[in-house]
Length: 131
Length: 486
Image (cartoon, rainbow over all chains, first blue to last red; front, top):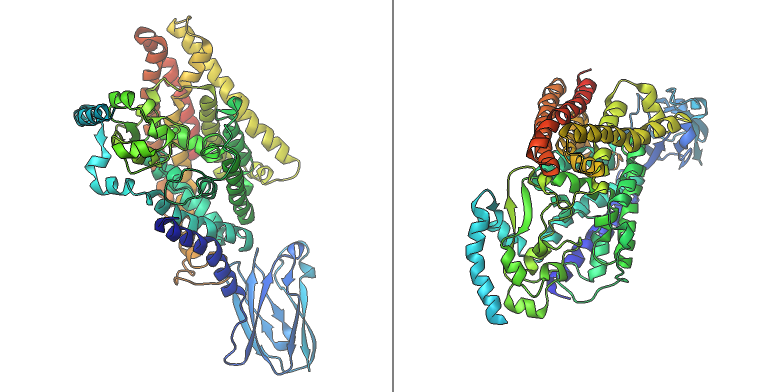
C-alpha cells in the first residue's frame, strides 16, 4: 500500500468510525457534575410516538437535579407542579433546562400542558425521589 | 512501435491547437492549477472526502437526530443545500462534476479497486459484465420515479432520507462487488440519469483533443486503463473509464462522463482534456439519441411540474394525499405516474405526429421524431427545475445556518449559530427570478428544437415544423408560469 493510500485510509476511518463514535460519546457521555448537579435529558415526543423518555425519573433526596427537556416533534411543555416547575413552550430543537433540589421524598407526577396530539391527556410521567 | 508513438505525440501539439482554435477552449491549459490537480492521483479522493464527511453526518443525523425536518441536518443539507447547488450551479455549469465527488459509490469503488488513491492491478469482486438487456437508463428511470413518487415523505422525514442514502450506498457496494466498473452509476443511480441528461447543456466537456492520435494509439488506456507499456510512453497512470465510456473512441456527449478524470491521467499522449464550450452543445449530437433518455426528459419535466403543483401549489388535499394520506395516496400515485408515463409521452407523441405531418417528411419514422424532439425539452425542463427549486430554496435555506451548529437537534451550539432565526430570503423576488429563467429556458429549447428538427427532417421541412414545436414549448412554459404566477 502506498503512502497516499495509507493516509486516505486513515482519513476514511476517521470519518466513518471515529466521527460517529465521537458524536455519540459526546452526546451520551456521563456528564461531570462539578457543582453536584445531576443532569438528565428528557426527550419529549407526542404520546403516539413515545411520550416522555424517560417517563420515570428517579433521583435521591437532596440531589440538585437539572432536567434538559428536548422536544423531538411538536411544541410541548413540562409541568412538575409539586416543585413549582411550569415551563414555557418547548419548541423542537430548542431545549429547555429546569433545575431544582429534590428536597422531598415521594412520587410526583409531571405532564405536558400543551395539547400536542389527540392523545395529549396521556402525556404524563413520574419523578421518584428516593431517601 | 515506439517511434510511431513518439511521432503521434509530436503531431498532437499541432492538432491540439487546431482542435481548440475555433470555439472550444482547453481549460487545462487556461488554468494550470487545474491541470496540476487533475494529474494528481489523490485529486478525486480529495473531492470525495468533504462530501463523505457531510453525508456521514447526514446519515447519522437522519437516523438518530430529531425527526423535525427543519431542525435536522439531513433534510436541510440534502434537500435544500445540496439540491440547490446541484441543480442551480453544478449541473448547468459543471455537467456531471458532482459524480466525480459523490461519496455514494466511493466505498464500492475503493473495495473493487482495493485502493483509495493509487492504481492497482487486481481488486475485489466478481467483475461480471452488466447484462446487455439492461444497458440503458430504464432501471435508473424506475429508481428515480419511485423516489419521486414518495418525495413528499423522503424530503421531509430525516430518517427516510438517512436510510435512503445508506441504502443507495449499500446497493452501490453490492453492484461494485458483482459487476465491473461503476455499473451502479451508469445503470442504477436514480440521480445519475438526470444529471446525464441535463449535463448535455453544460458549458464544459471532457473530450479527446486529436482524433488521429487516438486512432493510432495502441493502448486505449482511456478505456482499458494504464499498463506498464503505456506508462513508458506517458501519462501518470489511471483506470479505464469507470462508466464504460471510451473517450478516445469518440465520446461526443457529456451524458455518461463522470468527470473523474481517470482517462486524462491514463492517456499516454496527453490527448484528453477538459474544454469550456458554448452551452448546450451536446443537444444537437445525434449519436446516442435513445428512447430511455427521451423518457428521462419526460420524467424530469413532468416531475418539475407535478412538484410545483403538490409542494408549492395551493391544493392542500393533494399535498395530504402525497404525504401517504390514506387511500388518497393511491389517487395521487395514479395521477403522478399517469401524468409522467402516459400523459406526457402521449402528448409528445401527438406533437411528434403533427411535426411529421406538417414537415411533409413522411419517410422519417414517427418513433425517430418522438425520440429526437424530446431533447428539445431538456433546456425548458432544466430551467423549470431551477425555477421550482428557487421557490423553496430561498425561503428555507436560512435553516442551514442553525442546523450547522446543531445538526442532530440535540441542543448543541457548535458555531454559535443555533439561534439564527428562520429568515426567508427575498420572498417577493422569487417570481421575478422565475419568469426570466423560464423564458431563457423556452428560448433555448426553441433554438435547440430548431437544430434538432433540421437534423431529423432536413432544412426546408424543419422550417415548416418549427412553428408547431415552438407552440408546444410555449405551452409547456405557460404551465410553469401559470403555477408560479397563479
